[in-house]
Length: 230
Image (tube, rainbow, N blue to C red; front, side, top):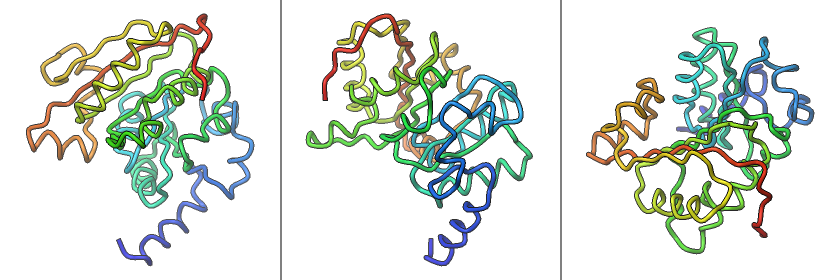
């Protein structure tokens, strides 16, 4: 994409109601107020991290109008695409948040998120980048604070090493409930139903190459305090 195209998208983002980003007044005060101050209806809040082009966020919002959906990504030119689709279809239960994922504690309140999706994140395969993996314990502790009681965390990837790493991390914790997982989502009919036939850009690429899609979901036991230290 050329520089002019990016600048045009950034200009659009700056005036779009369904994009919350630095520089907008709402960005500084939205924490704890997504349902009261942004969405027309007070509904369960579903958040997708590293949403990229927003296909999954829009797909979920289209399929589940009884929930509010927020896609989070730092790339403004990418979320412009999801924002455009939501506007085109008149989907008022969809919003996009431009921020680093490490900063989401500043933008969501304790127990504000009812369901969290992590879809095809960067696997960060190098050992020195382990702390940047979105299923590293430091991120899990952050998610735990933001999740409503009985809220599901759902993780989807094509990357086997990242999936195995995530399972190892989760199984070592004492505060993980109802862990379910598969190394081949498309062979698990019941788990596959939870995805409503929605595929992201990357999922389409991976499946066309013959990659198996891995998936897991779990809940946090909020009664067990954290033992992780940075």
